[in-house]
Amino acid sequence: MLERIFQSALIDADRTDTARFMNGDHTSFEINTENLWKDMHNRLEETLKSFEGMNDPISIWRRSISQRCLEFAKNDVKVCRLVVPTGGGKTLSSMRFAINYCIKNNMNRIIYVAPFMSILEQNSDEIRKVAEDKFFIEHHSNALLNFELNDESNEYKEYELHTERWDSPVIATTMVQFLNTLFSDKISSVRRMHHLSKAVIIIDEVQSIPPKCVNLFNLAVNFLTNICGAVVILCSATQPVNEGTLYPMLIDKNFSMTGDYSKDFEITKRVNVIPKIDPRGYSYDKAARFCSEKFAETGNILIIVNTKSAAFNLYERIKKRVNSNIDIIYLSTNMCPQHRKEKILFMHNLLNQDKPVICIATQLIEAGVNISFRCVIRSISGLDNIAQAAGRCNRHGEAGKVCPVYIIKLKEEKLGSLPEITIAQEITQQMIDSEKYSDLLAPNTISDFFRRLYAQEKKQLLYNVNVPQKETLVNLLSLNKNRWEISPQTSCKFCSQAFKTAGKNFEVIDNHAKDIIIPYDSEAQDMIYQLENSPANVNFVLRKAQKYMVNIHASAEQKLIENHAIKDLQNGIMVLQKAYYNAEFGVDIEGAEKETLIF
Image 1: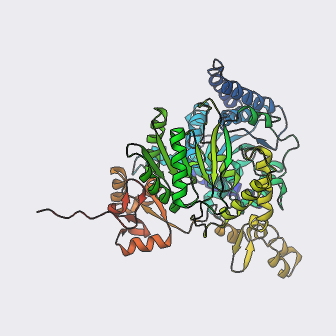
Image 2: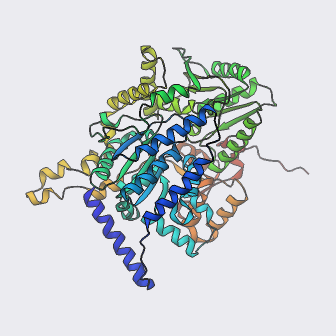
Image 3: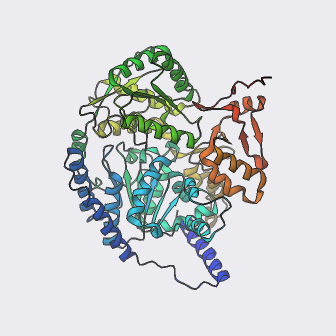
């Protein structure tokens, strides 16, 4: 970490100086953050004042959370936790802490990190209002949607520079970009790392960090907070127990921003988790019957399963069981992000009008989607996923009563390629069977789940790679024992780290699938035309086209190729033929029925 941060400062200084020299620019980049933080403080306090007239129990509770976060800024903080039930207003509360901590301790910047685009875009809108555009940068692929195709304006170039440097006072970015800044071998990632020094870093939905990255993340947080003067806030209702790992995170003794948060969970209890697990498992038909019965009782229902295949099978069966005038919505990653966004908005409107709706989805809907059903059914998974699913039920307490979240087991749901879900399922099942836990969503129950999970996955938490023999990234970036042992002189031993090898092998998400562009609408078709005809503009258009992309695995790719459903463009870019995309469920490997000519 120390060598990387030196390299980061050197690369950034060299590139920035060169650019300024070439442009004849001798102005200072320094921003008076003291005045900036005070202005942000005033704007946020004005925003919070607008909520003071709301005296329902949830609003009073949210103000209590916010006030406790403000008070916590008086402490000396390195690593703390913000444990707040769903709907607690943790974005503005964490920002209130961050701004006041920056004023008190002369911090350099605030960095907000979220794992999912849905959370990031939603919360970035709130943060921007407090920070103002000129002091705020969103660093993620969808931010490019603000720029026109072929945009070579100074505004776009300035945006690109800020995302390379992370020099803005307030930054909102993805978990992938944050972890790449710490571990990827890309120069753009290395360049921005030194700007994490003296920053308040808010990690939202911290449980979403992939298990393989846990020890790397812990060690990096320890370095940033103990050596670089940063502050890290771990935000989530389902906090992982990082302290129990081989390389534990050094959490502050006074770690809770809100004090005794167990009372917050009691005050805001909106759901009751009810295991309905048949030891033999439910068939798809039995599960469809159960879901239909619960829909008849409640009027709307969300069903979340672990695989796209299970979602599709239930969708087909439930369609046959309910009236044709009821809206049944399927959501999975077989649909491009723009398609899913439109479906969720449509569903949101139906729920707001209290119309009957059934949604069958994979876990993509679990975090960051501000939507609320009167009943949720979740195929058994990790308790963290079940807690996230429960956050989509009676989200704002609008039902006026505690609503049910059912856990079922699908015997036909195949998890062969998803061993991490299988392990999480087994641990959840053991905890249900033990009858020790009266509330499966209580913070202590979730902590126990993560302790068991990390104990069972101990070896996986070190990030295993084959380079070519079995190795871990933790070892490659620290002592690199094999190289150490064969180094002839003591002076060489301390140059043993394999930075380049580790950086090349680091991926936040294991992605062995390929992206395929969907000609979903006229905008997507225009982008495809651009990719075919403007080779100089490929990278820019590709980044904008991400909202029209679907990840397909090798087996699906092969079938689509056999059906002549894929068109290959330059540089390995693939485009799906329109007949192979279904308005109900996305990519259709078999394709639509071909129209016949009528004479």
